[in-house]
Length: 141
Image 1 (cartoon, rainbow, N blue to C red):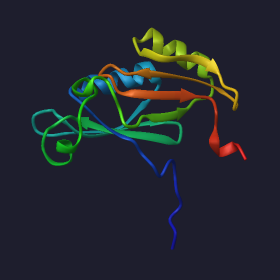
Image 2: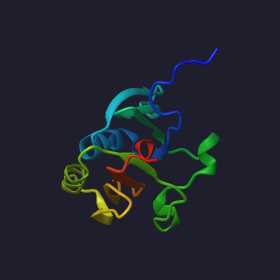
Image 3: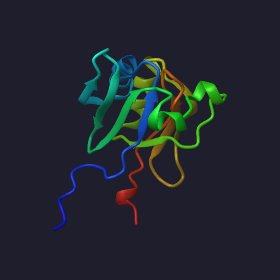
Image 4: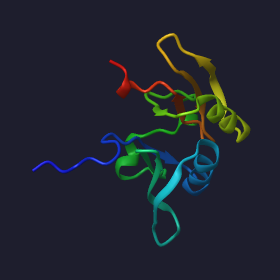
């Protein structure tokens, strides 16, 4: 029997050197909401879930063990990334202004796109790349 799907079935996962600060910043700058934050006995974030509409990102503190040994932080590789999260927002211009005011580093300025909608690219407080746009691929034929 197929279970009903609530939200996205693909969830980006990120690692931060200071996950607590990242959680606060992502909520302030991008409008995410805390869904769950699990810490170890030392207060390190082992697993956190932040929601945005029907979507979610998961994150934790960076560590060189386990799965973390296969990941690098952006500042360790000259700010380059092999992927970034793309988030659909209702009012892209307002979202851009909010993120910019919170200190997001804009790497691709807000613009109306020929294929529909608007969008912009930025980096968060630890250099991870994000794309925000009003284009909704689920509503486009």
